Every structure is written in C-alpha cells, then in structure tokens.
Amino acid sequence: MDTSQRNHQNAAFVGDDGRSTASTVEISTNSSALRANSDDQEAAKVPEERATWGKGVEFLMSCIAMSVGLGNVWRFPFTALDNGGGAFLIPYLIVLFLIGKPIYYLEMVIGQFSSRGSVKVFDLCPAMKGVGAGQAFQVFMLSTYYAALVAIIGRYFIESFRNPLPWSTCRAEWGIHCINSAPDASNWSRVEGADQRPQNYTMKSQSDRVITSSEWYFVTEVLHEKPNIEEGIGLPNWELVIGLFVAWACVFLIIRRGVKSSGKASYFLALFPYVIMGVLLVRAVTLPGSIDGIYYFIKPQWGKILDPKVWYAAVTQCFYSLSVCFGNIIMYSSFNKFGHNVHRDAAIVTGLDTMTSLLAGFTIFGILGHLAHEIGTDDIGSVVKGGAGLAFISYPDAIAKFKQLPQIFSVLFFLMLFVLGIGSNIAMTSCSVTAIRDRFPNFGQWQCSLLIAVVSFIIGLVYITPGGQYMLTLVDFFGASMIALVLGIAELYTIGWIYGTDRLCKDIEFMLGRKVGLYWRLCWSIFTPVIMTVILIYFYATYQPLTYNNIVYPNWAYTIGWLITAFGILQLPIWMIVAIVRDPGQTLGAKIRGAFTPKKNWGPSDPLLREQYHKEIENELTPKRGQGIWAAIKQNIFG
Image (tube, rainbow, N blue to C red):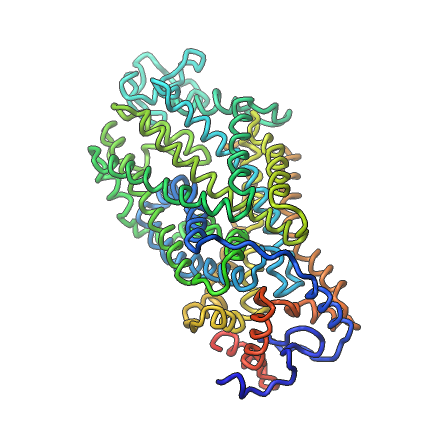
C-alpha cells in the first residue's frame, strides 16, 4: 500500500501517551503528557555517533571468529563421542535448524535495526531489560575463565617446542601408577589405564588406577591441583599468571579502538584456524586406521536417537557453539550499517559453524581411529576420555603417540586453540564494553577496555590456582548453564510475544526490503521458545549436585554458585520493578503498560529513518481490536 494513502491519527505515528502503539497486543492510548515529556527528553539526548565496521566483511569475519571457537574443536567431537557418534549428528542438525539458526538471525536483526548493545536493545520492552543485564553479567563471568583456559593453552603451546614433549613420558615422582603417552617409551600399550601392565603388578585398590603421563603432567605440573578445596584454593601458579596476562593483553590491544581495531584483526582470527585445521585434517585422513574412526563418527547408532540425553546434548552444543543468547551477536551487529544483509551473514555463519564442527569431528575421529589401530582395538569410543580436561589430557595424549615429529602437530594444534580462544574472548569482552559505554557514552573505549581487562585479570587469578579447575567448573555451571537457558527463554518470549513476531518481521522488511518467510515466523513464535522451555524443564528435572572428578564441593562453594545464579536471574524482576517505577504513567496499570511498550525513540538510530519507520509501521501493526485474543495470536504468528 502506498504510504501517502494511509490514514494515520498521529503525524509522528506514536500514541498520544508518547510511546509507540505498534504492538501485537492491545495497548491503552490514554493521554499522558508526563510520559511524552519523559521520552522526549530521553530522545533529545544526542549520543556520540556510533562506530561502524570499516567493511561489511569485517562483521562477517568477527562473527566467524566469535562463533567458531573452542566449542567446535574442543567440545563437539567428544560430545558426539559420548552420545553415539553419528547418532548425535541427526539431532544436532535438527536442533541447528529449529533453534540455532533462528536465534542467530533474530539477534543479528534486532542489533542492527536498533544500533543498540545487548542491554540497551531492550528499549523494545523496558520491563525486560533484566534479560540484557543478566546476559552482560553472564558473559563477563564467561570471559574471566575463558582467558584462564587460554592461559593454559599458551603454556602447552610453549611446551610444545620441547623434544621430547614433556607430557609424553612418566617421571619418577609420579610413582608406579603412570603409563607413558608416547608409544615406544614403555611396554604398556593402552591409552587410558589399560589392563596390560608389567607381570609383577597387582592393583590393590581403586586408587591404584593407572594414569597416563599426559594426565599426570596436566594435574601436577600445570595445575598443581589439590585433591579437594576444603581448606581453600591456594595461590596462583606464576607461569599461568604470565599466560593470563598475555591473554588479556592480546584482548585489550585488539579491542582498544573498538570495531576499528577488532575488525582488522578479525581476518586473521577467523581464517588462520582453518589453515591449521586443514593441515591436521589432511594428516589425519592419511594415517592408518583413520577411516575406521571417521566411519564411527558418521555412522548413526539408531538406538540412541530417541534418548533425551542425546537431544539435550545437541541443544546445549548448538547453544554454546553459536554463542546465541549471550548478547555477543546483538553487540556485533549493532555496529553494522542500517540495511546490511544480515540474512546472508546469518546463513553463512551458522552453516560454517556446522561445517567446522564436522571438519573438527573428521579430524579428531581420524586421529582416534589411528590410535585404535596402533593399540589394536576396534572400540573407538574407549581410546580417549572426554570431560573438562580433554583439550589438555586426551589431545596431548593423542599427539604424543605420533611417531614422527609430534612437536609439529602439538604446536599447530595449541596455536589454533589459542587463536580460537582469543577470538571468542574478544567478542565477550567487547560485549561488556559496549554495555557499559551504551550506558555511559562519555566513557572512552580504551579506558573502558583497560578497566575490564584489569578487573577480569584479577578475577581470573582464581582459576589458575591449585583449586582453579574446581572454581572454573563451578562458575561454568552456575554462571553459564544455569543462567543462559533462563535468560535465553525470557529473550525469546519477550521478542516473539511481547514485542511481537509480527512487528519484528515488519522491522526486517523495513530494514532489508525482504519479506519474512513462514519458517522464521513459526520458529520465533512457537518452535524455538517451546523447545527451549522443554530443555529447561528437562535440565531442572534431571539436576544433580555438581561435582568435579566425582568430588563433592564444600558447602561454601555451592553457596557461591547459587549466589552467582541468583544474581544473574534476579536481574529479571529487579529491572522489571525499576522500569515500572520509573515509568511516568499516572496509575499502576498505566505504568505496567508503559513498561512493556517500546520506548518512543525505539527504532533506527538515524532520526530521519526512525521518523519514516514510525510512519510506515503503525497501521501495519494496529491490533485487531475487538476480535479477541485468537485473532491477535494469529496476527502475531502469520501476519
């Protein structure tokens, strides 16, 4: 319809209460001069012009560097290994289609459309600002321990230049319950505590289990790990302190000028890991027995496909691999030029993320097939173990078994992990910086980046103590898994039903000039939030107290964990109350309605575009008043 022919009640196409009435739910339009004045004052604040990516491809490369990370190379192959190999791939691809891809595109759209970071973007529904605040807290906690992992990776990278590799053979101080990881250094041939031991050896107790030299090295030489943390976590390891400093120095130097500097670094951070991955893949598939490992990876075990644990693992892998519902995608896309083709970029990144996971799977399972061939077993799943230390136990153990130049593979592998870790941490730290600078625009980019790097470095010292892995596991569970699902579901229902799927689709049409298909509408309004809700229910229904290596945490540690979770989730009711109290409505009902209505200045950051947007959007989204709730629901889903 020609916009000149439309009959609108208000020249600015906002309600008389000073807010947009374009919503898929019925909203009161009682006059309120106070609310209009309040929003006008906020809209009158002209912030510093927001930086943008130098080139559109820098945004794409940054998203690749963020989403293609440790989760693909480190977590995916062994998640598949623990869940039936090929049986895991089918649920994973289905989940990617119904959850990963829709959320990724959604977050790209609202970030670019509003040019707002992950917290301020909830101007679309001020009462739900707690979603963005909780995600900002969550991503900050993640970045602190991610850097600690990068520090450990850096330690292994340096040690990889030594000949022989320091974890390849046992040391006298590790005792008789050690088995060499290197193939020819001992007559013990199994990888993970085998039954082939010297003839005069007898196991007297479970504590006498045989441990590989790679595990001994990780626990005693790198972590100096304590048997428990009942008496505290100890002091930081000075070697890892240096690694932690280097990790945060890299992050700061790359983000100190915002997207102007991180965009340039994104080319290397996104592309270089693929070079190394390609080299490792070529070498892996040429090893004897590698085909058996790859076949195990792609062959479905149909009996496991109906196991809810496999589906839960697929959802969590997709969730964390793509970094959806953490705020990072919203933050990166907020620096795009209005009209940038995020539909194409979302398809590229989600597709590439999946291909990278499969590529890593072929590489790792090719190596596992070779190891099974070397030790004379057909059971691929028993060659190495998973768990939190697989990057630092199983992978080094596998590398040490290469008979020719294992140092080359070790250097390449840990350099790849280091680059992947830095790329992901840049996104998380940038998300924190953007959230702060959106609230305090006069706070300089490099000053804010330096402050967060210093504070995160200090917090990160906790994770490189003898009890650091206990704390890392605790924070990962209570600060990531427990919070992410709740806030992610709140985000989906907020955008899909409070702001409205129909309005979101009209926003996309206004911004990109393309109609939104039924697939996206059904995912955003029904499939994605419902599946996520089911996963959350399953998560809590199967909840068991967290342990580390089967060791129960002391009560003070559980208290810290639940406090972290509570702080993140309580952002929802806290900011909801704040939004209702701050709303200038005259009655409680008016305040509640106002808190759940987009702010007047919601929309494109450019004033002219925003005015045009309000003119074009209002009649399109006028609720079907008087036709009942089912008409509103149908309009929201189908338009």
